[in-house]
Image (cartoon, rainbow, N blue to C red; front, top):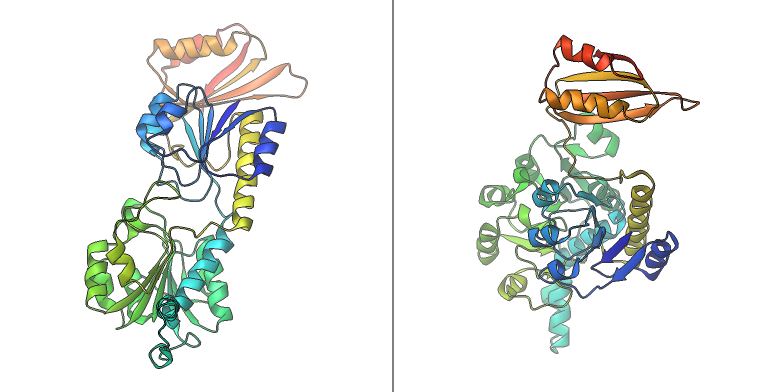
Length: 396
């Protein structure tokens, strides 16, 4: 297969892909607007930060797999990829430690105002009295929204700092919270009311868009810290700017609303950055350890796809189809059997939503399960049964 890598990837990963017999084109300088003209006849596209827009997907006539070398897939036009039948996968869990480390780093930087102190020292100002006012973290309450792999890793690190941890997540129950050693909150608002600091670890989804809004911020304690190493979309940036201007809260963020698409770009919202106690240019997953682990996972995805046609970690496969009934066809393993079955279904305007054909030991017989969007009439099932090499066909 021809593979286009549109972001920086380790030489070890590129070599591994080439050893699998693939043609690899690595162009880490490509931007989102460049991809439509660069995709050519590539069958696999691997990206990290570069956005994959609709025009790229439409231009990729041979494209069948897009790998996001990271966890989030909000930089990829999933709707367009699904429309064109292109698998989109990610590499979850491979950057967990890196993001958790940065979250804790930003939390400490916010509490101790490290960035401001550094700037003053570089400007020749020794302000020990001003920067000696930190509250400290031991015994204080950290609220965590989202306890997936990264959220759990932050829990471990916060507890090592002897912080009290309260958490909310859609999947979190009181029992699971007890297992994690954290306090259970039934709603995000409950977290906001008790936390001295909030660490965000939520995916960008319609239900999390602007979750951190004016109402949420109003519930926070005066001077509370918000750390965001998740996604910019979960913030109501207008409300956040108002709160920062009023000096109600402190914010340390690795993500922003409108981020530049490349690795070296101007950043327009300098006033927002100036209002934060610490900020970084979306580098949460950018450690050597994480990059190597993500690259290894990308290679594994390509290998599985090459061998089976079904890549792991697919994020745009419909979880539930419109199928209403199963047609199970046991048949001899001969050419044309399934063509007969499908032709019968086509004539009745019945669509196959899913299909799996399993071959028995010895290779003489097989069993095919077809999930159909409507129930065939008895006469149609009889017609299928009458086909050459069909052992039996029945609805289940």
